[in-house]
Length: 370
Image (tube, rainbow, N blue to C red; front, side):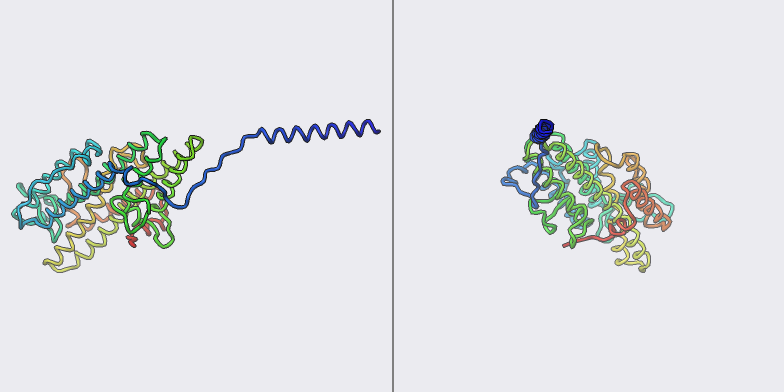
């Protein structure tokens, strides 16, 4: 019995030692420490190229705004397409912007205001467009200012973000660039946004700090931490950057939903007004909202690495009567209430493409500002 007891104790000791050895040899999974805020020591120095793009977009937007303000009163000079902004823009959209800048100046220098061709008519030959209220429209009723600015959020800014993500991701400086090109800064202060970040903020709940803007903040904080922690976290980095792009894209098309609804509301209100300056102003503002929806959608056409397809964007532009390569039928929205169903179709299509809930769609109808 004694020998059996000694043997049993020996075997138990051996088993215990073996278990300890296995535990010691089991690799431990590294833990990624993610800070609560965005940290960058040399942010401004790291984002000079992106800051140039943002500033050039702001400058050309100011120039087209000034053209609108001076339309039909002061001769408007040609507007240059800034070099760096042009360079980061998708080639096809760059060509369109170049043409739109010329057309916008022609509209501003037109002797007449915008001439609504009326139901079932097209603009008369020789029309250049002009002011409807305070909004400068081309002869077809499209506000080219929005096509130049808001379309560039996708065709230029998002396109540049893709270039950064497809480049060197071993240095967290890349993430600083992604913060800046979206239109935020290291504070992610909702009151200090520009460009696309203004609209991801508007589609977010500022009280509860939820939604696209705050998700993008979390995505970039995570991606930066993953890079700085080493290549063990490359998968975490890549997932965070994919989420950053998706949240940017979804906020862009949630904004299209906002402008579809705003266009219907503003046109309905304008149609109830008596003819005169107030009605013209209201109609012009409605066409401004309409053009924003067209521009936000069109700017993503041709971009790789997105959820929505170009065919789906073409369908949306078709419902807007603003198919690329064709003269737009934007003026028809001023004359045909039945076209509200086109805007409803855009909302329904985007809801299905992105899986937005009814409650989310309704929330997109509100601009959330600080």
